[in-house]
Image (cartoon, rainbow, N blue to C red; front, side):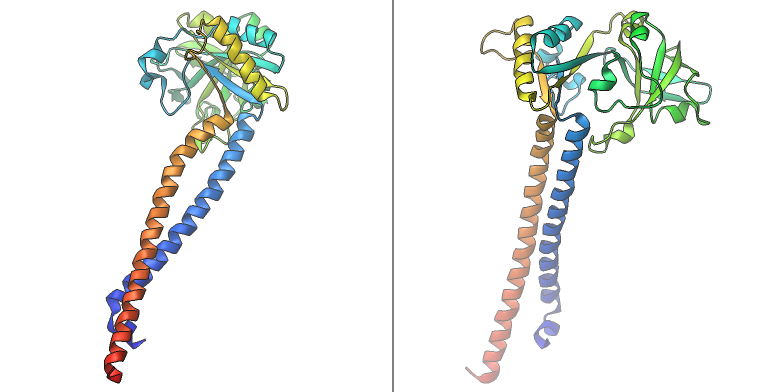
Length: 312
């Protein structure tokens, strides 16, 4: 104890190093546990037997930041959806949705409020069955009749409805989307399991045929494919073969589309988190090293002083 009191700074650094090292190790363990939970939730909400199909390569960039080669790719079309459903035995169902050009900003408003930069999609009636994050909270989902007759009906995202209708009762009310009147037929549940992205839900869903009618330049067709239980890998392979043939991909050439599953998207986050984990481990090792050097120095000083005292 006398040695510790004599070398206060050295003792403090030693304690700090040990505490830092142990603390960082505990933090890393907690992060790993929490991240693994998020991964499982992401897979569950994404749909364990579903895959996302797009002309864009899935990754950590938006359409505006995509390479020129991707921007020049021809869009997917509704005939691709039908070909996949008819030619892939492992595929249970496919739903297509259409989005306006990414460079345009869209908004929805009422007298009570307005929401800008909405996630605006034209969807098919089976969107709610295939897409795991499209449960209806109020009202009803878009029907075959709505799509057939190009009805101007809309489903609001769970976070959008309270902004436009603070007093509630959105179903049956009118909203304006880019200046056009739409009738609210339902409210769709906000996404979960998207690594915190559910709180940013701004989804606005209208019939796909209505989207094509009101926005003739909209050609960004994407698809969500649902495989039979346990057959996702086979479904992905079959769908890839169909699209390669339809889109003229040469044998052994690079695909001009992407098919991604929840596991593949999660692996992107894994790569990022791995770097974070490694950095934290290095930091904890440095902390423990500092603490170890401090302990060694204190022990060395203590031995030296005792040696002087006994005259050895």
